[in-house]
Amino acid sequence: MLFLIPAYLSENSPRDFFAPVIKEYILMTDYFFVENEKTARKVIKFFAPEKKQPDLKLFILDKYSENSDLKEAQTLMKSGQDFGLISEAGLPCIADPGNLMVKWCHENKIKVIPINGPSSIILALISSGFNGQEFTFHGYLPIDKSEKKQKIQWLENQVQKSGYSQIFMETPYRNNQLLEDLIQFLNPNTKLCIAANINDPESEFIKTMPMKEWKKNKPELHKIPAVFVLGR
Image (tube, rainbow, N blue to C red):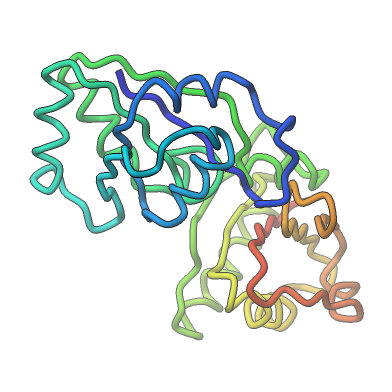
């Protein structure tokens, strides 16, 4: 079996935010697909502190991975070995490369077990006040300034034409610059939700305002995990 194990969005999240079954599944296997070994070990320790770290067998599954890189793990799974799949943050396979192994499991008749947990994308959307029936997630916006401008204005146009909420992210150290670009390129009346440090009881920040208000009240977002939502 392949267990899709959620990770916390914040290290300060109370453990009672999460289903007890997460710990049970972590204790059932020593074999895990992970995007980052250091992060995965911290997540495993958070949910199952009694788990012996030296026993862990971690296989890197990141955006550069291909099936050919995972042959050893796939052979073990075919022989009956259970694996867990842990994202960097939130649910596996959403803004995460884990779908490579999930697809392989379906093709090889290996059972996939999803486990309840947080998704920063969904939590931002439901906290925004925007359309939760129809929405699109775009991942990261272009780095090039002119391409980013075109993308931002295209997203605004999609909101105006279709009413679909438009969700996107940025690398945390570029959040402040992204907000400056949004203020510069969007109509002052276009509404934006910023959801930062979701599930952190001390510093969670979620607010929806028109761009003209964000211009006057710019939050400090440098190196803070955040999700941005445009809507109406």
